[in-house]
Structures are given as structure tokens and as C-alpha cells.
Image 1 (tube, helix red, strand yellow):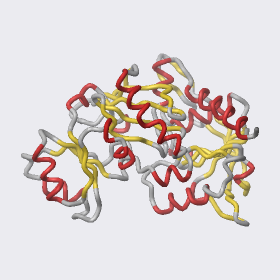
Image 2 (cartoon, one colour):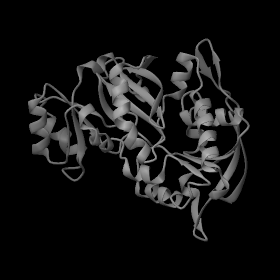
Image 3 (tube, helix red, strand yellow):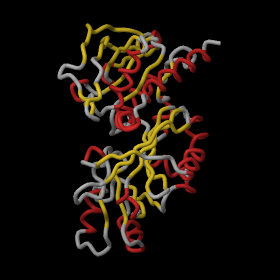
Image 4 (tube, helix red, strand yellow):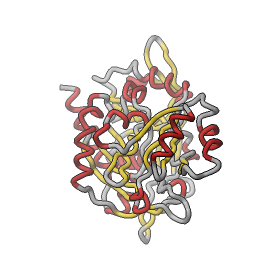
Length: 325
């Protein structure tokens, strides 16, 4: 297969952590042709999606003493080539949030591709639909009590009813901008004003789940089926478990409640073409659905001696074979 990855610039990726790199390695190991580009290099030419692409060869990271170790120069890039993306068997849209207007334009360009010949992961329409915070609101039965508002009075009323609440920017990633709100905090009004841009931008407020101290479970789903999980445990004085802010990781088993959550959301994920997804679960509640560039594969592979990337490539080959018949 010919596979294109739309990513942030490769020098910004961490080959010992980033799922995008794990997917590239798995594709290369199975003999697939890998190309990369950035959203800014997408174009529409003759009513078709085109891109400036570079061929990629990666030097796979290796497990040494229980840790991923990568070469300093872990990739080689070929010359830029302008190609129609319809020549690709699949395109992985793996650009990190925030989801900006240019990001949405990129998904609209990708929407010109025919699913019968070029499979896009995740579906452009799905990416347009699924804000990683708001999308979870579709599944009221499995999320903690949550509001979304930019109205300071509405937010204060919610916080005052709770022992604590968590504020999340709707466009954040990796724990950025997440705040713990305490009704007794004299800075509460200021925190709300700063986070909402003085009432101009809505935020999500969720009931604080004390179980967060025991970890924030990331579950990777492939076509609605969970294929692996990792627990992210807050370290030091930070209540957030995100790996990007220093959360420690530990193996995680799927509980009956986890399976219930996955079953509840799977039909909608599949309907929206959200094939490769990372969900966050705390204390038996779904808190986020990550669809743009979900991470966690490197950690799951390391802790469980598996290759989720290989599973993804085998699944993709099956999807391609099905679409051709």
C-alpha cells in the first residue's frame, strides 16, 4: 500500500512517544510505501485533493531495558513531489490540535477523496464533527456531570454545587489549560474570566472525580473495538495525569465498565468514520474522546509487549481489500 501521513513537522515528533511514528514503523515493517506532508501543503487541483509529499524511511526505535530508544537521526526524507492524494491507498490525518480554521480547510480538501479508493483515517467529516471535548456530550449515560458555558454565573453556580470541578478549554490538548476549580478560591472569578476570554469562548466544566488520583485511563479503539489501554497517574503536585505534563504510566486492564463505555460509543464512532480513537476514562466515566492524533500506542506496546501499529496496518489491509470487492 501507499500511505500518506499528514503530520506536524517530523523534527517536532518524539520517536519514543508519538503514535504517528509507531504507525509509520509498522507500515514500513510490512513493506508499505510511506509518504509524509503537512496540512499547509494540501491543495485542490482540477477538483481533486493534491499534496506536496516526501517519501519517508524510518529507523525503528528499539526497546532497551524497558524503554524505547531511538536514533538521533531517526528518519530520512526524499525529494518533494506534487502528487494527487487519490494515488494513495490511505491517508492518516495526524496533525495535533488545536483544530483551527486552516485545519478545517484541510479536512474539507481531504473530503474530496473517494473512500472507495483512498481511505482517510480519521474521516474528514468525522473530524469536522467531533470536537474532542464536546463530542463526549453525546453520551450522557457514561460521562460525569458536565456543563459547557462561557457564562460566568452559570459556571460559578455549577462549581458552588460541587466539592470541586475541572475546567477544560474546548480546543486544548495534552492537559493544556486544564484547571481545578474550588468554590473557596478567591481567584475563581479571574480563572473563569481568563479561560473564557471574558465570556467570549465556552469551556467545559466537569465534576471533579477523586478517582483521578489513581489514574486517567487511555483506551485505544480501532473501528469501535478497544485494542489496548494504559493508565496515566498524576505525579508530584499536579492533578492531571497527562503524559505531556509528567504523568507516570502503568499497565491497565479493561474493566466491565470500560467495555460498557466502548460499546455505548462504538456505533456513533463508526457512523462518523472515527476509526482510530483514544478515549479517556476516570473512575468509570468517559471524560474525552480524542480523534485528531490520539497517543498512547508507544506506552501500551512497551508495557504489554505488543504492536498496536501492526494491528492497525492489518486492519487497514482488510478494509482496503473489502472496498475493492
